[in-house]
Length: 167
Image (cartoon, rainbow, N blue to C red; front, top):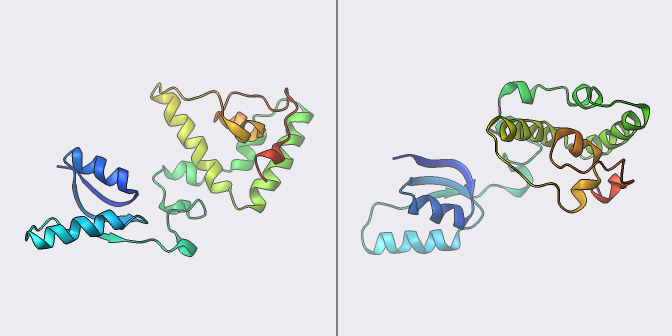
């Protein structure tokens, strides 16, 4: 039996895990009402299946995009020089300048760890022949996300302003 532990879950994730027969002993969650009810009934009926949980602090959430060292991705992606990686994908001056401008915006928001994770995620999707959507919402205005492969809309070709995504 596999166990869910040290994973941030919501109540739906928890129920799904329990229905799949996974042992749940300790979780990290922000949803506690149903867990508290479950634990209450376990104690009433003297079951030993109480679920221990931790509530991550919003100000220091170890799973946030700013703390990529806690994310499950290979070190090669954590160490990736995202600037060089993206600039190497440009083919002309217009693309180069667009990537530089977007990188400045991503860097000002401390979002390089997220970009590294997206490179990893897209590579994993491709290597496992998993299909994903063409693009959705304001994310398609980012040329960087297009270069990474998150979506398939060339925002330069369609003259989309990346600031729509990064407002």
